Length: 486
Image (cartoon, rainbow, N blue to C red):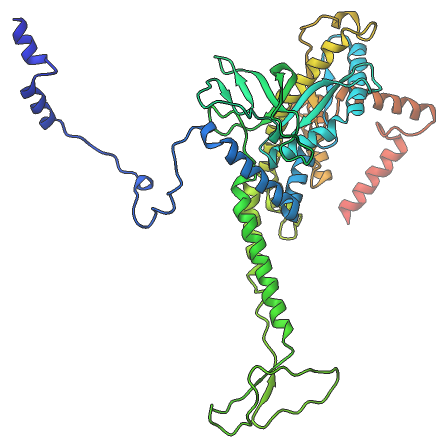
């Protein structure tokens, strides 16, 4: 009985295995993109299956950083795109709003934090970090102590370039470590290696000494594009060849125009090679003077070189390539080029919607990766200072409810936006907190300020604009009736 079962179900039975192989029909799916032929072989030659960290190896990241920095330093469009992106994302800097039950305490802490942020130049450092993310792919900041600050909290941010975060003595067999970062078994960074001297510094010594910075003291801002990616690559990477093409094409157009302009005229004849025209020296150069009368040899005529550059497609080429360059940053063409001459109101708003969403995503990432870390370190130091924080907040590790406000985006048509805002408030589909947040303002602060202004206007006998006197209402109604009749 046992042998009979083995004959039927035995996986190693040669006859049964061959019969099964002959009976099973293997079906292969076909994908055109997976086919390799003579037409696309060179196009896909560099496609590989490397992991995220292997693809972004130290040498690859170094080359991409250097090329991205070169373009940003020498290409006006690249410099403007990076600067505009940093200005739009960071603006004048974030503003803190605590949301504890004590409004007076919230206001006091917010003022102290903003005073500290101004002292350390937080907005400027955040803009630098955003520009570094675009050019270098990542930005690093060390939470350190600065006794020279004129604030009671001595916390400061020391920015470090990506080149300096590296492990020069790393071994190939070391696990749970990527160039400059050491991880635990769960994938959490536990320490960063920061070279004491920048690799490109002229004063750099021959040593490869580095400091081990604990992860709680290091802020690492980058955009992971692949699962398991530990280091960032420049956001301008897909556009680097396009910047080179744009520069080459512009130089070629200028060179062709200059070459044509160098020739004041050329001598040509309609006579055949053995015709009646006088013999002249080929490629001879004649000096011309202003407002002179010139005679030609017999059978020869004077003509000018027709300038073919810039061609009519030059502007269109620049527009298309700039549009492609800015796409990797989710930036519309008119923002990247600084030119909205070809836009109308509707297309301008439509293109900006994608851009504004991208900015909000960037700000959300900065809130989590940078600002919350900074606030936590600031509060942990502040609680150690006598009589600096109120007693309810003097608990290390407590969670303080808060949010960050950024600069609002200016509307293309303020009148239409104000009308839409009034309708949203009247229909209870929004709140004052949401509307002020769109402008990057704290609604409590704005309402308190508005209340002070209204009270002062009443003291001075000025109209607050809340209600119109009876006479003005009648005059307004008469004017409306007259307009309707007209």
